Image (cartoon, rainbow, N blue to C red; front, top):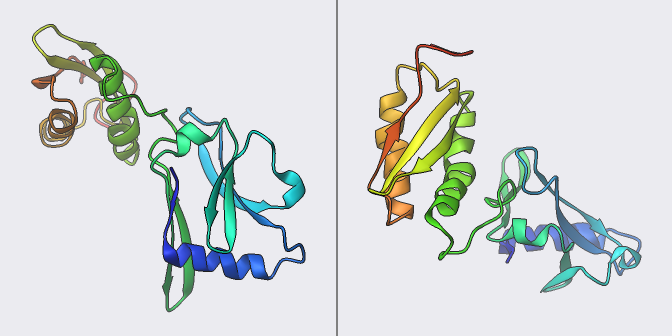
Length: 192
């Protein structure tokens, strides 16, 4: 389900009122959904561009259309519009655009991978790093391997315990802790 804040709805109504074609609405989409290169966007959607398989989200004064392929990647998406002295900023946050959301009863490994890809790796990417799940042990530990800027980083222990482990323990009840199997002194980016 896509949530569009009241300020964003008002912004869209103003933009759509300026269009020559009264039947124009908006389209919300994801290019390369489910990949690390996923990009979200919003565009005008004339009446003749609506496909039979599109999902319609009606709002006051307009509708938002989503193509069938993009739909699962836009679960929990939020579109907001904020104004300041310099003008306005439209933001689209789609936490599931790069990774398809998994069910609450999915296997532990799938849920761990989802949290890592959707929440943890986007944060680590800001520092050129990433982490992968190697395995989930019988005694409840997520065995992880760091890469990129995280490999050999002097703050990796803090990241592991204060960031990653806290997040995984909070989101995945079966997880008892994390273990790092990375060879931090070897590889392409040690001591990034």
